[in-house]
Image (cartoon, rainbow, N blue to C red; front, side, top):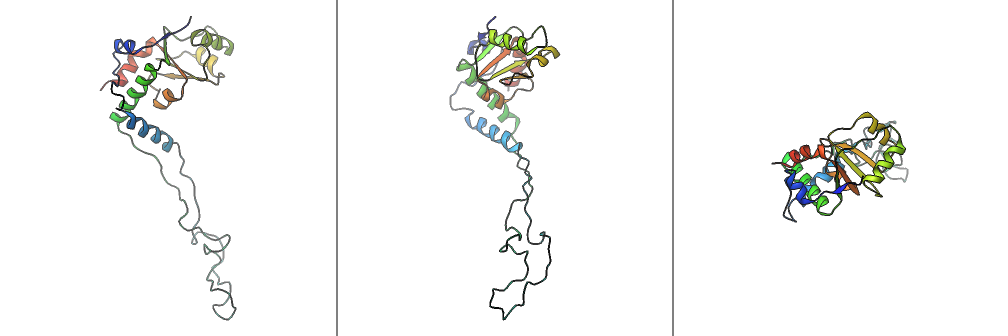
Length: 205
């Protein structure tokens, strides 16, 4: 059974708080996506300064009389294998985004995806047997052909998880876990009716 398109009127009937102004929330979405990317950075890049390079501190040659430039140590940054000047050190790239900004960004993206007709709704999401073939058949009958599909429900049973785990273009997320990045990346979004109440709560002020 094919899913029905979830409209803005359907969202309002489900008590979802939408963003009516076109310009409102754009910066919030940008800030949150940048924070997602920054928080995934390990910040593990590390270089050694001249004091950390392992080696002798002996002066390579005497100060005068050789005709060569003065040199105090082979660990100097001007030498191959020497230290690095102002090189990267381990650091924390994570960014903080407050709750109101996160909520506004979530409302903004959800509103836009619904307005574009990319959000579908269905009664329930489940398959009868834990087989990839069964899940693919269910998705084809419900959503149809799509490059990537985000499936949102209040919860999934083990059978559905097992059937969907090898389908690379489908991502299962609960209504509590789904975030702005998931909504932006999916080509189509399938929402179960039992997830609407939780999603509505996440859009509330």
